[in-house]
Length: 226
Image (tube, rainbow, N blue to C red; front, side):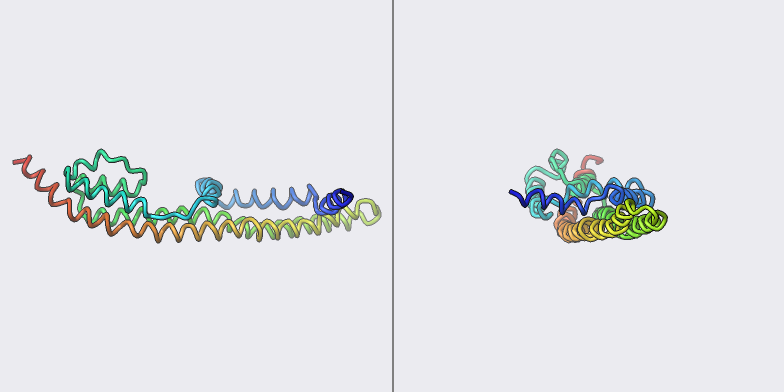
């Protein structure tokens, strides 16, 4: 039991509100100033993705197969009443129902996938930017502490606090960059690569469905027009 106060005292030696405010506040402010608001929101919201399971396309592939069976039995128009939660798949199915050319559907899928990659990259870049500026803010805190220390050489009581700011600011900057910001950025990039690879698997079955159903839709429309 006696070790608990000693541990708290030892940890308290590494806590300095001034150094923490300089490093964290400065790094956050610099990140806000250098990042567009839209990307800033994405970067913050992306934290919720980290605890989730790895993205897999299997449920969507199963749904595409089910939609193909529905189209064979009840016609392509029946797909318009299907509930599709994934926006990329929903857009492709809407194009199939509207008899959009297959090349346009393929290009749309590629554009959606690239846009998603860009959004994920922007979120990861926000955290990479925070990792870049955190050590610099630590150095700023160190310089501030040193200035305070040299200007108070005649007052020994203030030298210790100034030295604490100088040393702890560097520590906080290194910890913020290497234990928080960089790991988050790396994990977001890895998740983005995994999702991009999984979503690429959706293109072939959707294109195959579009190629199979488009002639049927055209023939039905021509019959109605006649």
